[in-house]
Amino acid sequence: MTDLPSKTARKLGLVIDLDTCVGCHACVISCKGWNTENYGAPLSDQRPYGDEPMGTFLNRVHSYEVQPEHGPAQTVHFPKSCLHCENAPCVTVCPTGASYKRAEDGIVLVNEDHCIGCGLCAWACPYGAREMDQAEGVMKKCTLCVDRIYNENLPEEDREPACVRTCPAGARHFGDFADPTSMVSQLVENRGGMDLMPELGTAPVNKYLPPRPKDDWDDTAPLAAFLQPVAQEPSGFLNWLDKALDKLPGGAS
Amino acid sequence: MHPAPSVILFTTLSGLGFGLLFWLGVDSTPPTGWGAFAFFFIAHALAVGGLIASTFHLGHPERAWRALSQWRSSWLSREGICAISALVVSGAYGAALIFLGQAPGWLGWLGALLSLLTVYTTAMIYTQLATIPRWNTALTPVLFLGLSLSGGALLSGRVAIVSGLLGVAGLVQLAWWLRGDRAFAASGSTLGTATGLGDRGEVRSFAPPHTAPNYLMREFVFVIGRKHALKLRVIAVFLMVILPIGLLMTPFSHVLAVLAVLSHIAGVAVSRWLFFAQAEHVVGLYYGLR
Image (cartoon, rainbow over all chains, first blue to last red; front, side):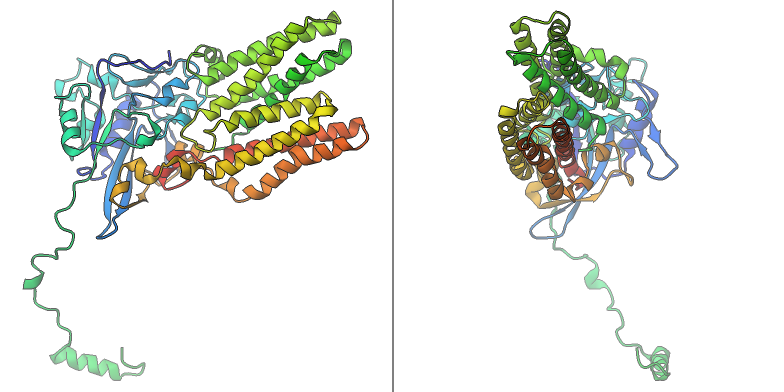
């Protein structure tokens, strides 16, 4: 049923640290790899080697520039995938019951055998987290790697979403937000974790940690004072050459 | 939003068909025999034709029956149930008028009510989306119902009221446009709230996730339609409201009546095209596009 559960026992989700993300897109690739080979229909590509290559991705990394009123602009890399909202508008609009939010752990999933590919859930999602697979005609979205996190065939350290497992910067964290002592809950509390587009009332489970303030924007390079000044006027042979060249037709440069 | 022809056709034709079914249902002296056949055939052809067109954009139309199951939460599901009920009930009413020459009035009224509910549920599919501020208003169902009722009145030849209804629908359309042009700014969503970085300074998109457009940009960011939006609005109102009213003021002739109907349909189709093409989805913010 596309009614939302009134309460979920656990709230599994991600913390994404915008201070740490280096924008390498490794999470995008590992997500595409795992989810093409496992749960549900593969994530297709259209014209992968042609003009305008397109494809289905469950995770994409944007880069933004933030220009404060004073001081230099800052670049922020911004990975975005399904936020597994508590008040998920994508679930309630689904006419077939293919979209659902699990009562046991809060993961929002699509039953691809029931999906008619009407696209309304993607319209309802403010975050662009759902993409219609152009080859399969069904809606694809982040599963929080539901086929990894409970998978006892995998070594224990691999039982987390592929994006988290692969992140070389440690910018992604997976855990239970319903448990206030969990690492993700602690990170949100200590670092001021925030919601995206809170004005829409979707109550996202995933949280973003804002970039930390920089120590000082105005300092110059510490070794600059010790450097020899760069010669302004040539001397010796170069001085003669400079003058000689200036005398040639065409004028001084 | 990408203006998919299937959805424009569906909302235009079905709206008109269900509007006609409404007026046939509430008619105290309904047509019978061949006259009834002609009216009910046109109404059902428009409504069913529109519904069939709407399945063209589905990834898996063969599973469309599943869409009837989630009426508790989904307006799309409710629309499917209302549409089928309206078609069955007014189909039975029409069949009785055609073959028996009479039918119980309550059956007509029930069909009329279900037809209106169908148009209302169609409108609510769009109205419910907080992600598209232009649609997210109570004026949207008023607009859909207004156009459906006036188009249905035009098709069923209710000359006494049709000009008034068209005028009202035209005014609602103008109000809907005026409100819609301010809706995105009024919604408060910006790239700042979308990224949570707005309180640090001005946020701008520096590099998109991929070098080529993706499904999200194709579906939700449609810029072409806005260039000629004002001209298209004038054309829509002229064809939808002004020309039909003008034609109705001339002495009655079947040719002019057909012209009035065709002009109205073309006008509604232009208006519906703008409905989608001008709608801005908040996800465009992430791409620095609207």
